[in-house]
Image (tube, rainbow, N blue to C red):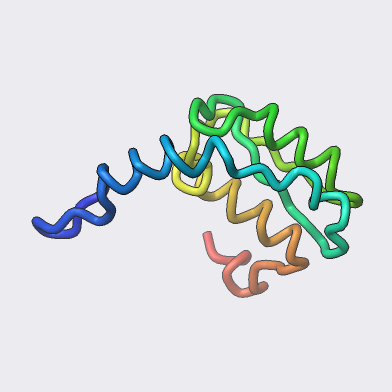
Length: 105
């Protein structure tokens, strides 16, 4: 777990309990076809916690969804491919970088 100073953020005990007791029973696939909002699904080629096949399945089940696959990332593309992740998020949200920032070397 990440640390701030000497205080850990998160608890391995809580994480282990969640993975053991809740995750195996958490299945919302039947509800996904009813999603009617713009949806960006983020997947990563080397994610060993949430396999890419799960992101691909969500993409198939959510009408009109978009799937962004980060080829060089594991479970944290927002860190591992930070700039590419932000660019994809901005694209999906229809945001563009300010012109002044784009002109700077």
